[in-house]
Length: 354
Image (cartoon, rainbow, N blue to C red; front, top):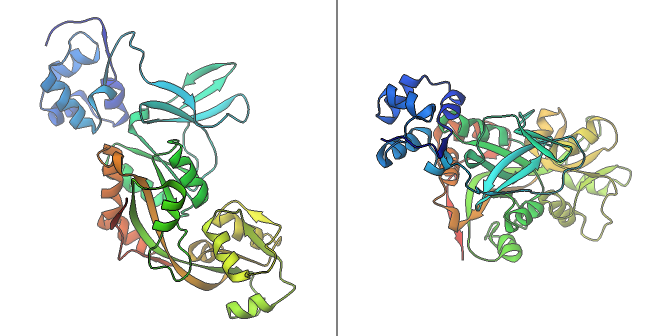
């Protein structure tokens, strides 16, 4: 090791974010505690071997820890426009760019923001690194379980942006997210989600099977309707729909055939059951999980494959590798499989789209 004044590092920030002492980091990286201390105060520059050991201990790339002072660094831009100022944002690195995401509600509850944008100034607020963040666009109401598994076993953070399958694939194609959740297989299809992904994005993607889940009709209690056919024949029921491009909207279109779709639209599965539970609608299409959570009646229409789609070229990204391992892990599969309507026997299977 030798002295240098032109190298800045995130060693202390990463260590403290994990709750480690200098001695603990030294043990994990196989270097001395004195070396850790000297590196943190930027008095010593680590050797290549020490830098690689630190990166392995933190579970990130070397350039996520060390950078030359005055270097340009990655480009920073909004993934989509901020709705207003001040605006809280999350950040993540995708394809060499740092993207900023306006904070929005999702299935993970309240997540601390990484910064605030106000009066043209970006003010950092967290120790989360963009390189350690994985962004998934998905409508899976159980995404919190996957985020928890990733956090439990790795140093990576999962952000879920709530979007329909088609919109999620659109964001993936624009390189605005790392992965997209999709359930767009048509009834009776033996090819699963492959045709829908290939039609929208072409080849060069991989599907990671998360689960098969039940999609069907959520009904207000007291309707005294016990079959899908009886619901469809009932002319006075108030329906709540989903936006075009969602798996639920596709399912509803197949049910309705030539019938005019509903005018009331919900943003996601939980939005459907909230509309029914609040008395604004009587019936809508969603997955079994959210219907049972809301205490509604549920009539199953079909089993669907829910996959996570990512560019095959990013398969070596440590975040994607960690995502695959998390989906395949026994604790996650067990928890997910215990949810109403989820079948995890195929979880972790992958299919290339050429």
